[in-house]
Amino acid sequence: MDSPPLPAAALARAQALLALGGRRVLGIAAPPGAGKSTLAAQLLEALGPLAQVVPMDGFHLANSELQRLGRAGRKGAQDTFDALGYVHLLRRIRAQQPGEIIYAPEFRRELEEGIAGAIAVHSEARLIITEGNYLLLDSAPWDAVRGLLDEAWYLAPDDAERQRRLLTRHMRFGRERADALHWMAVTDEPNARLVAASSHRADWVIGPSSA
Image 1 (cartoon, one colour):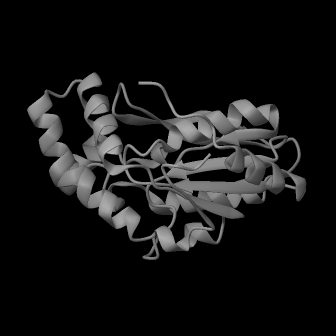
Image 2 (spheres, rainbow, N blue to C red):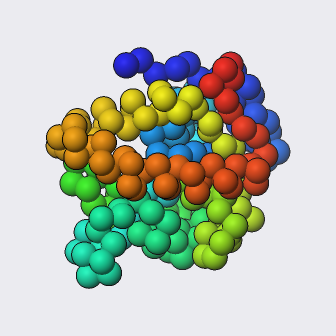
């Protein structure tokens, strides 16, 4: 399925952030399957080396730790991430010095694990685009994220389309259809409702008809 085009208003807002000068951090929050990573990648393609993408998903707890904590069946919920680690990374990114390289983790969906040090954040990148589900939550420790973002967007797609994308993704990475639908019902959709409840903390909401 083709991705929707980059909304012109999104590119204009990102360019306006760059025009402010200095290092800026843009956060894109949305429920599972909304297209956060696609939007971030489109902005990166449009802005080139002025921007860099640093997703929240690299801070997934390892599968072994989720098993130890009894949370493996809820992977993707707000308490299955190293939220404080993510907050500390954002603080480092905001304070990055010229010539300094900061290494960030990256989530590899084919492994279902985060890989430490997979993203090299360069000081020359003036706009850091970070995306994830829980950037706008107002409960600790996630509540510290919002104050570290120069601007926060909330991506609110059509729910039926979002669920179709989720089902396709789960099946592409090895789940049978029945298992994928069950996972969506008991894990993804409760997370989506929690994320949607935080949308009022965004500076801008991008709806299905945004262009």
